[in-house]
Image (cartoon, rainbow, N blue to C red; front, side, top):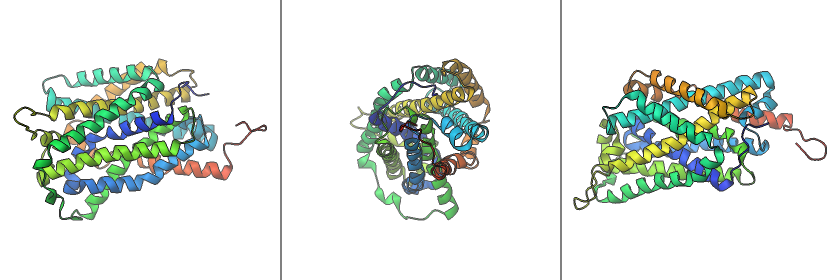
Length: 368
C-alpha cells in the first residue's frame, strides 16, 4: 500500500520534471571552471548519455503502475535485498537534498545578504520545503507550471537583452578541452541535472494514467535541458573565457544589462529564478525522501516524519562541507560518484530482472 493517495496527470508530470531540471541552473556556474567555453557541448553530451537511462525510469514505472520505487524493489529483489536498495535511495535523497539546501544558503550569503547567519537560510528554506511537501504531490504538481514559466522567462529575456554584447567567436575553437576535463564535465551534467530525475521513481506511481509517461518525461527533460543550454550560451557569448574567473557567470553576465540607464542590475532576476527553481527541486527530493522513509517503515502517511527529517536535513547541510570552495571541489570530483549506480545501473537492472522474472505477475481475472 502506498503512503501517497494524491494523483497527478501527464501534463503536471511534464511541468514538474521541467522545473526539476531547471533547478540545476546553479550547476552551470561551477561547471564552467572545468568546461569553460564548451559548457554548451557538455550539456548536450550529458543529455545524450543520460537519455536512455531516464527512459528506463519511465519504462519501469509503466511496468509497475501505481507503485513507487520502494514497492518495486521489494517485488523484484525480495524484502531483504529490496529494503537495502531502498535504503540506498533514501541516502541519495538525503545527501543530494542537503547539497542543494547548502547551494541556496551559499547563493544568498555570497551575492545577496552576506551578513546574515548561515544556518538561518537553511532553517527557513527547509521549513518552507517541509510545509510545501506536507500539502501533497497534487499541490506541488498543480503549481509547477509557475516555476517553469519563471525558469524560462528569465533566461530568455536576459538572453535577448544581452544580444548586442554577445560575441559568438568566443565558442571557438571547438574540442579544445583535454579529454579528462571533457569526460568529467559530461559525467557531472549526465548525473546532476538529468540523472537525478531517478527521484521521480517515487512520484511516477502517483500518475492517474500512465499511457503517456514516457512522452511526458522525455518532453520535460528536453525542455529543462533547453533552458540550461540557453544560460550556458548566454554566459559564454557575453563573458567569453573570462567566465571561468567569476564565482557566478550568470550573475556577472546579467549585471552588464543596461538599457537606457533604466533596465539595470537585472541580476536580481537570476537570484529570484534560481531560488524558486531550487525550491521546487528540493520539494521533489524531500517528497521522495519522506515518502520512501514512510513506505519503508510501513506508515500510513508521511506527515509524522516531515519535521524530524527536515531537522536532520538542516544539521547535515550545515556540517557536510567546511566552505563553498570545499563544496564545489568535492561535488565536481567525488561527490557524484556515489550516485552513479543508483542512476545508471540499478533502474535498468531492475527493469531487466523484472522482465526476466515476468514481474509483476498477473492474478487470475486480469488483476495485478
